[in-house]
Image (cartoon, rainbow, N blue to C red; front, side, top):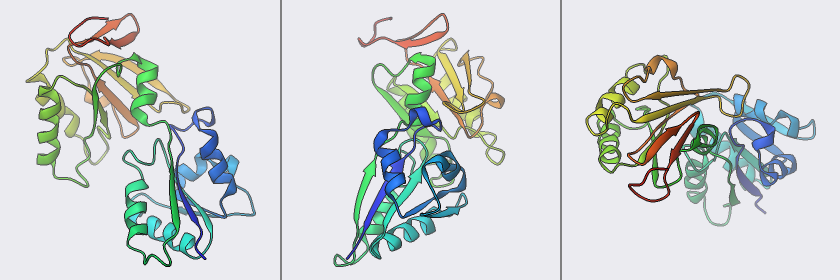
Length: 249
């Protein structure tokens, strides 16, 4: 008899931003797996009656295989991600891994949504995502930079508000600078930009800039960079995108 694998989005980090469904799924699990930082974020939900299995960045495939294997063996399993597990999280890999299991052994899988980083950052900035927007990761670890830049140009030309994930890290120091150059080909220098680091966590930082004044050094892996469209204005400390296309707030 197979068990249940629940892929859980924990939200941006603070317990206040977790959903009840996410908390119930972690508490009810017999086995909880995840990147060690994400497990620390939900340590208040786990106890000695559970098997808690930490892993490191880069071990996502093994993590998914272990989670599916435990659930196929009959356990109730929670596989945790930060934000929403279906947005740059573990859901796609977990579902693909489960789909490869023979039907007789395949466990039930469900995905519990969470607040993703773009939404958390948008709330802190005001309402920059009020109309059409796109999310794009600047990480080229799983895609060639040429593909990333092609998508960046398409979004820039479409005049969509853009939330940039993974903008900069110690090993990827140039991508955000290049993204700013590409965006500047399509948008004026006074386009509003917001940088939100550690949204909903200790050390939360919100900064406002423009496309011309954006300093890539202010961003890191835990930063979301929100670039406005022609319908986005700065209203005091807020970035607000009009609900009507082409209008101002």
